[in-house]
Image (cartoon, rainbow, N blue to C red):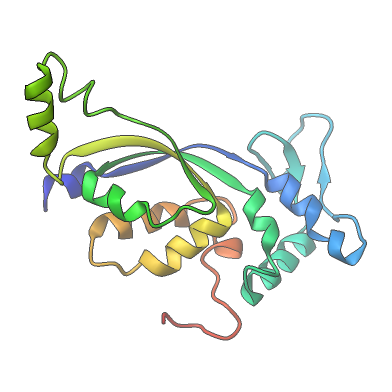
Length: 192
């Protein structure tokens, strides 16, 4: 196995917006969410704490799953569920990640000038950058909406580059991934 594949990693930093998405879910129907925010901290078997403690009602989860299966235009609340993550990947992976510009944002990255180019003269720095290997590992902090992660998942889960398959395995670990991200559409149970 190649070093860049062995070193590749994705770590969840934070997840937000699950409660807001569920609360917004039934607005088009003129109804309130069935799920409720919990004002006091106590143990609830159906609660997940990612910023706001929320008791999720299965009817809201099932409705959102149903809407996800019908397409992005029906499940637009997925744009409000956001994941921040720390990714360590080779530069060739980052070139492909640039495909995803809607619902994805790079917050920061390691600087080749400050890390690999530390102590180099201007000419040496330019030469180093001109010959920087595609396999050079770089750490970046990214933010993704669940809607974008769903798109990435179905486009990249069987990709030839193993880093994409590993990224999709990470997506599968996210809360409600089975219900909101990896669930197939009504019209297609197979890959395109």
